[in-house]
Length: 274
Image (cartoon, rainbow, N blue to C red; front, side, top):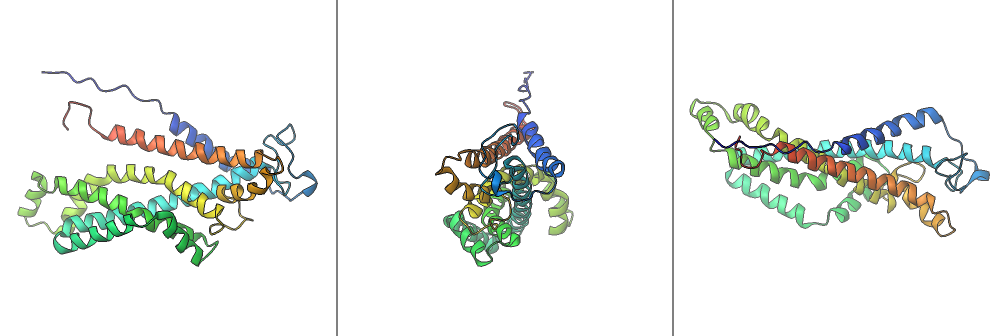
């Protein structure tokens, strides 16, 4: 009997980085309290009084960036959950019913994938500019097809499994099979897909706000901070762009690495069959 050695556990740094980012987003605004615009302190470079400098309105950039992370993380989480739930429901329904309905759903998925996600998101968000619900809808409605395709492919690969055939032969309804067998079978894939959607949601929200169709400039999000920093950089205030840019890249990379780590851990070890 061949002994299979499981790979060593990977470093959990993505979760540590995400925990630090989430803690900073919650704690820093609470400790700092309410900020008031102080134009006499505008565009001060990083120093002892303001660790990361100030923006063009005199706001402390560390506090402002923490507030932006709050909004961006909440919006990304809601978008990822909404897109995952929609994708799982459509994917399970398509694979369970099959036939012409499955073909129609797949053609709809192909149509969504053929459209540029950013352009479609801009169109949806621009119809209700600045509305959080429109931003969430623009991101969720452009990212569910990937989840639906993954879920459908997974279900088709297990549709001929013995336990599913046994349930059908025993007279179980489609709803019973979906609830007791299909949904648990794809729960791991759906969770990984949701985590992998988080960096996409963060980038898309930031892009929409940067282009002026997302959150309004008075609302702190990573996209609005980057948009406001465009003019400041031209007069030498590089920190107003560098700070939110580093926060955006670090958050997206941490989410992507966490998703890749989860995907690795949900796969069976090489040479071993579950």
